[in-house]
Length: 591
Image (cartoon, rainbow, N blue to C red; front, side, top):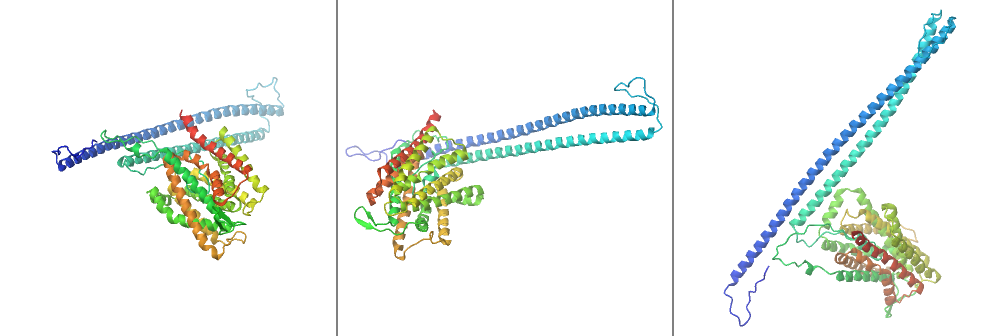
């Protein structure tokens, strides 16, 4: 729309047109623009309604054809079985008649021999003799009739058994056909529902095309766990939508307002930095043999000793802050979050609930174990060993979903395995800095990676049924409940929390810091996925172990041996190769 300058520069004559006339002309142009856009949207809605009606008619035609084919199949099947049974009965009658004829000939020959009147020539098979009636004719005839009745009864019993077996087989096949019919109807119903939902979404989008909050699909595992790098995120699935035509007079500002990919990469790098700071802060919060020197300026002895119960307590203190601020952040990121959660509670979908709660439980175990690992071994080593979860996830996807790894995937699995061995062996060769238990730390990191793989697999099963942000909110709430119940249940002395009363202020402050870092990382990662895409964000996320080790060295002077650094580099490169392959593979398929 052409803009008009209502101001005059100095030295030029005043414009003859008054300000009211200029304002009136601008209002007329805006009204014309509004009517133009409204008319085009109405045309699109009418066209979609027409296509919807055509789809419904096509579905009804398909159902009618399915019923006709089913009736024809039933008629042909029943006719074929009747003809087969008639043929069997005819053959059986012929065999029975032949056997009866042979039996009667044999009996008449015996009667003739017993009467003493032997025939001059043998009786040909198939002909009945006429012997002289013997004295015991009645007795022999009774025996003959009894044998005949027995043979006929046996023959009819065999026929009855055959007919019963044929009837049972026919019943089984009819039941199978009925099952197939029900499955076909269910598939058609699901297809109709899916088409209806997509049409409704198209109508909502056309009714409000300038809504800034657009729905997208992201990797749920990228935004929940604050102690691991982002990895294994599927590329966001964007539903194709027809572009809404705009008047030629309206300038397109979408490209000017769209954030650049560079901004998304910066946000992803910032999220990885915050995650690394979270790990180092957690390391500082847990006591060691010697006080840790922060930035080489002052000593900090720590707040709690490493242990299972203390890890539960730290997780609970962090989640109190997260649950206080997460609803506000979720509403800001996704205004329909409460509608989706209400729909989830009203749906009664037990399968979805089992996946949501199961993933939350596995994530709860993973976080408690990684806290325990970071308290006993250097944070960089713990996060590197935690990276066993891509191997477990890939193998689990192969078993559950039939997604066989590619050659690059197998090489990456081998590289991660070698890197984990290189990163873990120096911890056993020398005593861990800080006086932690090396065996407990390595075992906890491995168990954390394995349980996190279970969380990723369950999250993949639930993907597409719930938006990532309400899914994350429900996950945080479930983990909060699990943490509270775990501390409420009486634990043994080795697993119960051991907290000095004088350190509660420091523990509360540490929980606030960890909770704020968690939400800040979640927010940065969320916007990074929106701007740069989940695949590119996952590549940046692979720098987590290296950045954690770097910040551990800069902040608390936590040094690593060269072999551990080499193992960390091998793991990082292997995981990065898996992420890059996920970016390149769709492009190869498209080309």
